Length: 102
Ligand SMILES: C=C(O[C@@H]1C=C(C(=O)O)C=C[C@H]1O)C(=O)O
Image 1 (cartoon, rainbow, N blue to C red):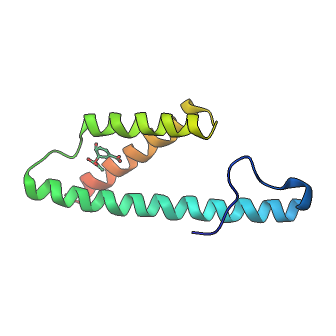
Image 2 (cartoon, rainbow, N blue to C red):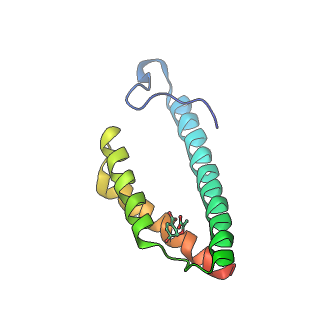
């Protein structure tokens, strides 16, 4: 992962539009890398579940993930409904992937 500024602390006065867009480009790269890592771990979880005869979906775990996403959104002062919508998508993507690999 690249180094990035703490939220709310991007030093805009020292940065050109190109610099700021480069910062966005690096953040976007990191987001995709994190999504890939999340999907990879979920695939491994799916294998463990298959070995233990457990179903793909775990609603209580999904609720915990959503609650955590909302709490982290509030911590960083971003819209919690938006962050939760993104996590809902990430969970659904994982479940599609997990079902395809079973
Ligand atoms: C990855 C898991 O499988 C599913 C996907 C989840 C997720 O993407 O966070 C959460 C719960 C499960 O419905 C898990 O059980 O942890």
